[in-house]
Image 1 (cartoon, rainbow, N blue to C red):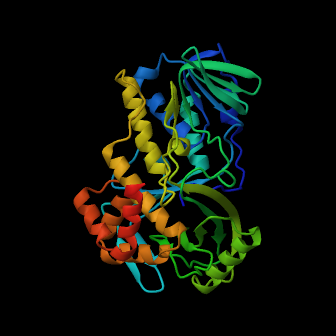
Image 2 (image 1 turned 60 degrees about the horizontal axis):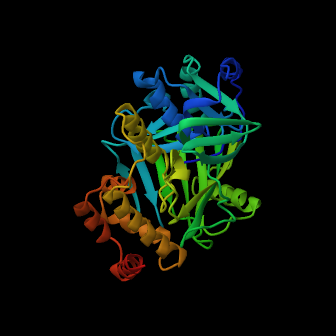
Length: 407
């Protein structure tokens, strides 16, 4: 529910022409970043900001220039983040709905924030074009290999090598190549709708609305108003298979008319996305090739949240490089602990032991919202996690937990 592929095209020719003027000087670089999406550009942004990287030759490889508003990221944080200047909208209150519970929560000290893809790309790339040590190559990445302890990337008709390659490209098909014990998909379609009159409270976001049909599996809608007459409405599912295209449209139309009680509106933009929800252990590194983003396991398996995990990883890698430490970031004990929690939830959802609507209802009903958000961000301590565990049915969760501990 973080990565969103908006189809509207916004041209950024001034940035692209500036990048095309950065001549590739050599086939060897200090650092190569493959994939100029959220993970790749988040790491690049850290490199742009720190003087340590001024004399480092950095190459970014992507299949094509980033000149479209192709996705949106939403996340929560307590303080101004590294991308605060491009936050498109923010909310201090959220609504939660299920068939058995509804509530409005104050998020302070958190804020729920939205960043549009085009604003993110423009922010990073505008700064990158001012650095003569940063280069771009557009071509499809064919392979990543390590030859004689040197990481090599083949892209388009070129070959480049570097001290380190940071790869954000997922080299498997999430639809057809499940690799974990549990393999669900978070798939979603959204409409940015505009109404002729003011009908939205732009200060409150609908975080989860489980009143929609659960016939396919865990399903919810959410609504993010960015003005009194403009809102992003999403229809999201956690299931093993995608729906037919028309089914997403029908579900969105029904939700808008039934629950938002809106019939007069225009669809200004559309988005569709698929995120893997799996306990598969993504390879973190191979020699000096280090995977980042979803390719490096930074998508939370049980929820699909990604943006903030990418930021934490980018900080850790950048800090390691600046301090001349190995940028292979080892998995901490807390990360392994949260990985177990994710596997337990995937076990329950995939085997349909309890509906996700009932699970999240219990979490929000029996815990302060801040504890739930901390838990979803992998930032709770064990004492807080015991309280989270105590809010869900032991008869369902304990057997699943024992099963994950014993395998």
